[in-house]
Image (cartoon, one colour):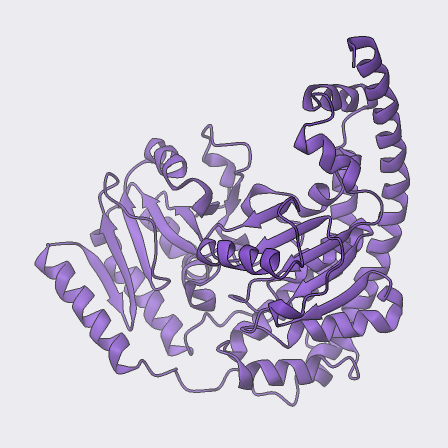
Length: 449
């Protein structure tokens, strides 16, 4: 194809992309308003099945009731704030002009073989999306479901066996309100995923399971090797603590970021960077961690559900409010913690240990990538060193938090995908937050870019 023909082709293509984007914006806004309304009803309607799903999750999974309530409350609050409409608006407002779209298509395409250009043509108004959900947090897969529905695509889900009740309850509820055309199927068993000519796979989970899941799907001929995958495999986040005062003033949010969900979330803090040494913060940190463990292993936050809210009046009134005793630590866990403490003493490493949780101080040159959810690494270093850690941890790193009222105080040339967030948003992110730096809605709708 000569240069003039290619230019003409790209211009026609970009005009089509622009028109698709314009139509999509209107339809997506309508979907967002409906989806917000229907999801909020799931929280408030006694017949929605939410209460049963919560009870099943409490009795049939490793999640403690307080963490479940915390997650439900955070999600409902964000829905009421209008996150879904804002998400659509954000994509539309950030969209470049027609000329810029032409330039993008022109630079991305080489004889129609460029993968991204092909993906733009493949992901049209209605595509089949397979979502493979993680199960490390309650309802962790909800964002992917929302993104697929807002985009106007068809959803098929592989539900995690670690969180098998809440998401199916929501999916069943939405089908009653007219979402059946988009919600195709879900299952806990990989082999039961139907063959459906999938245009995209959204994978969220550990890097160790990624290759085996992909291999299983290809060998079962559920997918072919050319099907694009978007993989979210980040496993931990970093917090920057500027002073001892910041720890004291923000200890509740700080402990929430470290210890909520047992530290299993990719937004959970696994590394702390601070110009203050751990020894200087031993007492306030010990007190804060003890307070967490005294309240059943997770921070007791003020419930964001209003007292008059139907969710509390009706659906929650039959459930116990996280009054179960502190989960016992088994003998092997105690042996492991005892060994770690003894080893830290032997190598003269500064650490804070409460229960089966440890915060260990490591030199920046040797601090490892976090591998144990209940061991947090403290790095005695400055902001300039934080940049080096961000580059070193690479795709394993999810987010960067700041302990203070103004997260913009940390101004460094991080990769474009990293935004410095306030520590109070660590476990309460907006529904449009970007896992692994990717806006899922924008990714699913390349024709609006």
